[in-house]
Length: 323
Image 1 (cartoon, rainbow, N blue to C red):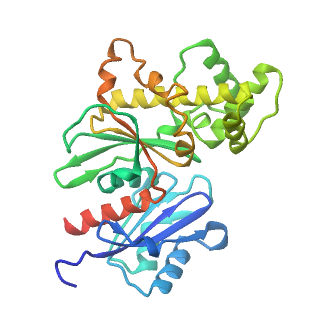
Image 2 (cartoon, one colour):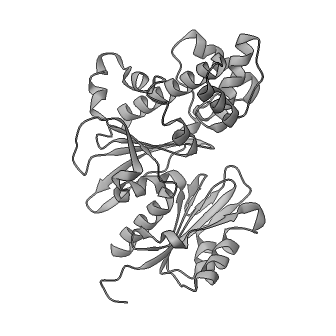
Image 3 (cartoon, rainbow, N blue to C red):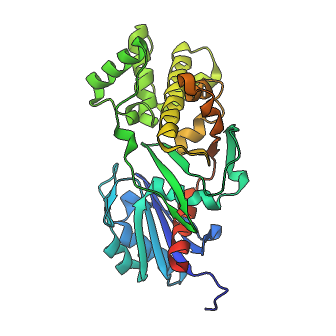
């Protein structure tokens, strides 16, 4: 391998249902190599990695795994599936010398440096900032999480986080009633109990109880009812969801000062993308009293690339191997 050839890595993104695996040349994922494995149909990640590499006939120099769950010291447990992912097992399965295991939102953060403009939809324009400015990535899908992204020279740092389990920020009686409903039905009223797929369903169920009418629906049916029009419960649910997301994003922006931008990602965020601004996201984001004008500095984008976590894994390996 010459110095001009990027090193080969295998990258994986493990969700609660599926695992996606691909090869990457430096920070670039080979799109034609992406394979999907159903978690329930393999014994664990090592089997999926061995199957993939046998099909590809490649031996990578590095391996990076992003997973939907907390990771500590190279070991993590999936939040919504009974898998434990261990860096040593990944190394054994791939025979790679450089191995990393990280939370999937950290991988999204590592992807930001490598995403094309076509993978981003602008929600709020903000102001131009230095390339080294901090950024913030917020994931809303099966779960919810957020993490700052820092550039230190040529290296990217994305500290781990479990932000989805902090308590809901409430501002009025309506939201207090929602919190009481969630506490009564689902336990601790964390962000994820509103800002996730199941959280969206929780809000609609609460709206039904408040109205004394309607039947709780799944997330897809709620969104279909909203888009079709004529369902005031769906309208109320989308407005509350968008307001909470805007408020939480604004709160986190004040904590981390991401002048480089706030990036929303995840399947639920993508589905809400076309509706967020009309439903009050922007107003809630900027609703910070005398700091409302200050909030206008932060651009907000929606990531539309479904494979961004794989790109983030590739970017991290490229930095580690070149460092």
